[in-house]
Image (cartoon, rainbow, N blue to C red; front, side, top):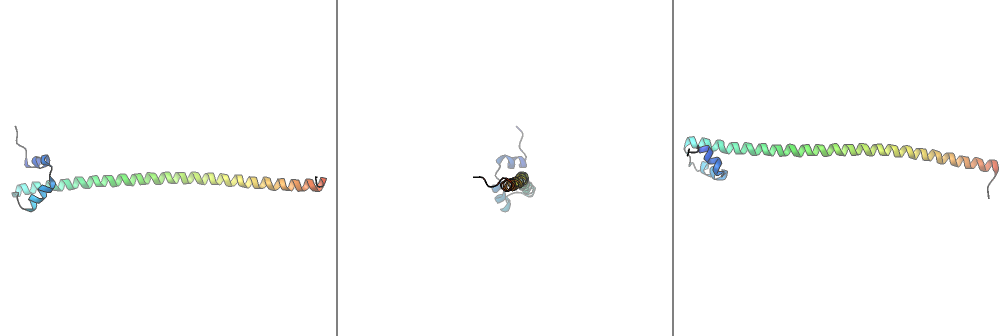
Length: 112
């Protein structure tokens, strides 16, 4: 059975807090201290990369939500414009109807 390297032992035990404490207490020889520090640094880099990926995913989700909101807003604007056109048409038809009724009453007299 082959013996694990010091780095592999650190990774296998997976106790970074213990490694930090031992490193701070000076319990490692210089070569092992360097390896232990690199191990801790790599864990920090990994966590920063994961954190960055999560932040990027949140930003992407936020952007997606913003795009959907913009699309809904544009659709609401289109509906509003259409409703305004129909309101103007209804007002014109109503005015023409009122004018036609007034003309009919003038020409034929009031109806009883």
